[in-house]
Length: 340
Image (cartoon, rainbow, N blue to C red; front, side):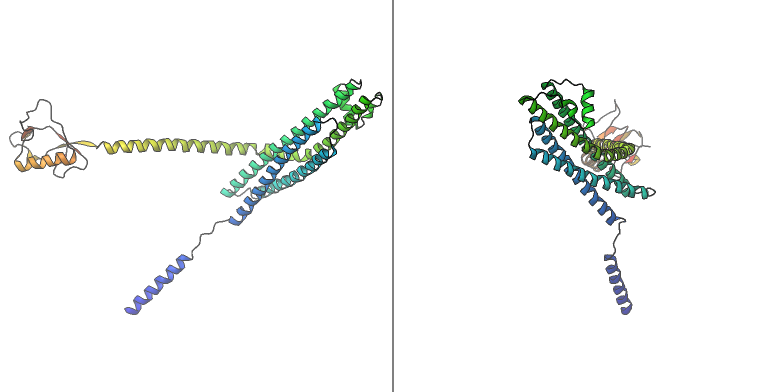
């Protein structure tokens, strides 16, 4: 028997040791960690583009405010434009790679797939918003530069329409309008600014064309994902509504619970037949011990007496009374039975 007990103890220790080594594996943990790392890197690159766009806007304003902008300012703008283009291409390639992986795993219906779709959609939309702001800044710079060229042509006596000015810009040859400018100091300065603004617009249009294909790719991607993003936002709104209603219901429950604690549930009871007068069942005659017991019940359980109106009541209030019912809380004394 002793040997058997030792075997059982050793077996129990072995089972305990084995139970400590049990681990629950979570599928795709490493893959999701890698995915979120890519998401974070992409988000930082989009934020970097956004900051560069704001810096480009400042440089645009500086160039437009100066009659003849400094070469350093234009060089800084050119470097910033190249940096934006490089980062934007990197983000575009990363988003398209994510899209391909999502399409390959489309048949899988899992929580991590929904997370990947949601994150990819949010980043794609954010990227398009940033690039749209950049495109708007470029178009605004082009229009304002064109306006400066038109004003300088007017100074030299050349009145041009928007169509004629667009023709000059598209041809890439400002000599179409500058060939007949009078040789004067004012005209030379105006001519220099016209040529400078024209070069700015030519470089700007080159940048716009380079980013156009990328912009269209991502814009189409976001347009196709719009319905899914709307569903996600709708689900989030519904979840918020459910939470708000749950909080309100919880507050009501706490309120009702507090009121229930203050108000004991009352149900009707009758005295047992042991206490009833054998001559008149509706009349109760209490001895001293019974009177003390009833008094204790009344005091301990907060018993509410419910005599019928017009019934006889003894002067002491307890000695002799014609009862129709007694109301007691649910946790009443076992010597009192409920009315049936």
